[in-house]
Image 1 (cartoon, helix red, strand yellow):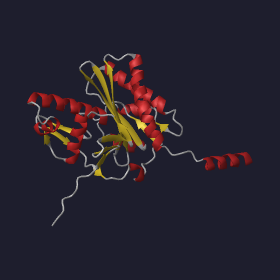
Image 2 (image 1 turned 30 degrees about the horizontal axis):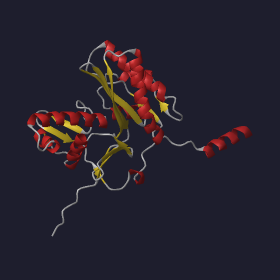
Image 3 (image 1 turned 135 degrees about the vertical axis):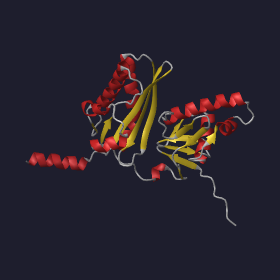
Length: 274
């Protein structure tokens, strides 16, 4: 008699992991605050990777005894919060794909394990990155100006990190209207990581979606979602850049190669002797 395969306790995807037993979503091992409806929705999607789940089925998962209108509203709110937490985008999804008038599908196949990520393979250290111009579907000079200012400020701040090389804005700005995927651009530029994103308007808000991509395998290493009221002032642009860098720096610092004090001392001794 064949025993049924047990459902995984921990689902891993990108930099996230969902512990089904504890009901916790973690990013880089740190617990993230997320509402129970969004957590239940994510678990359901992770249990059926690559499978299209209808809105009706997901609505029943969130509100088994609720009415149709209530379940639709709850589902929309849960999806919105889930994308915000994951740094995902409906227009360019990495995790949750929307199938118009039908439902949703979880894109990657999650890696399941009960072992803590601290015991897994160490991530590749990134010491040379590029921040690409933000992609925009709106042809508006003011819109493009704001995007360019955000990228320029992010580059300036990241370039101050010890032992971190960041390509200059003048080097990457020619990729503003390119249709090549970030991984290909990164390999062309010879960098280890690419920070890429999209800038768009929704109602009266400016939205910036950012992600860090490993150019070796195209892996998603980090992502975030930033909003500011439109039109954006100079201080608003500064705030967007500051939020991005504040969230990204710990990731890059974690992956940065530690300073080799022995080698440094040896070099200094050699120079002194010379």
